[in-house]
Image: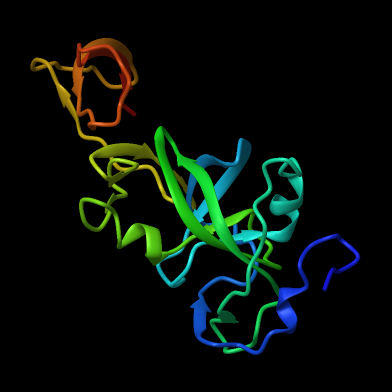
Length: 201
């Protein structure tokens, strides 16, 4: 049976198994990964509360019809509050997370995010579960370092140490040499020596 979109009307099949999808709406704060699905640029939302990886129907319809896989009957999806999500079906897709290429079964459903990256990928890599290192802004999966974007994460505090002992007179300011702590994710020059202006009251 075909729907008005020309897709298999698989949502009419009775549910077989229920999977919980942790997110219902797009949130500003979160962890995001740039990637693609069948050649379409996609921003994945990392969601450890989702048991399955899901792409939105809007993203699915962006895929060229020649590359769009045929959907099959899928398991029933439920949001975090137990309410069912409208879904079109499931299929095997070619996707990338950063530079990591994967071929995985994804579910197409009505969600606000472009795609939710669930535990079926994060926990079931070929070389074990993903190592999410938010302090470094990366996710390690299948020996591949995948950059991630953290929204709502405050910048870490850096220590600044004087390179020498200075005496700054009251109501004055001078330029001095200081050492600034770096983080592994910094893409700066190797030298830590920077000029800073320190003032006193």
